[in-house]
Image 1 (cartoon, rainbow, N blue to C red):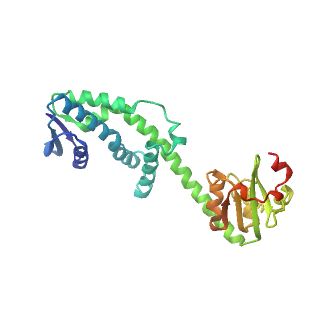
Image 2 (cartoon, rainbow, N blue to C red):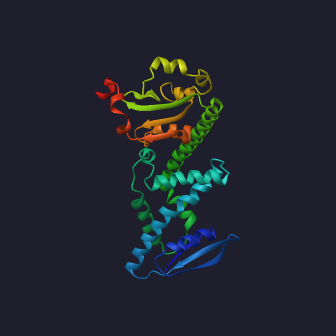
Image 3 (spheres, rainbow, N blue to C red):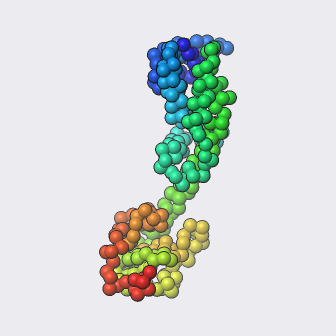
Length: 282
């Protein structure tokens, strides 16, 4: 028999769902407060091994979210459920491998091996174990790693919020410009996009610089680049054709700003006779 005591009934119920052995929950009083004890039947070595795996899975896959939500409220003062949910979503994506640009910043370590070892020590304890105390003291290294991940997620969330504000400001600027040009084609080169008008005649760098609305650099000096975004916003085309991959960050940003004004096409769709010689030789 193994007995685990939880401070919150919800935690006890979530843990019970992960157990690979028969168990039952009863309410008990500790220091005049309600606690919830799970009694688990695990008699054979096989049952104990399965229980050890199930508890390790519960801690790694379930506990992080409750711990993160509490840390966000108490340590970082995030009270808005939507903000908490968005930060947790970033962490969930990191844990599932969808954010390699963030996870590569984390210190490598054996999360499963560490928790498995601590769970084995927990199950070897003959007396009932208070799970919250176990998590606080025996899983401190795990929580330190979670805190490292949380810090990255908060920074990423703030950057994404700033990016959305930036995109919205540029959309409003574009709306105020109306449509000043008919069509612009953007063809990729080693140094960035080259501009062509609706007749596939190249727009020179000098022409682009003269077309730029200088107010953009005063209002958004850190975000607006002079080679692509600033000229496009200033020209305010009715239609933009980008030749290349939507996976490129600059293309994603252009899509977010210009929305339905912009179409992405394969590079092969650009008419060969209109490609300047220096581009054709790249």
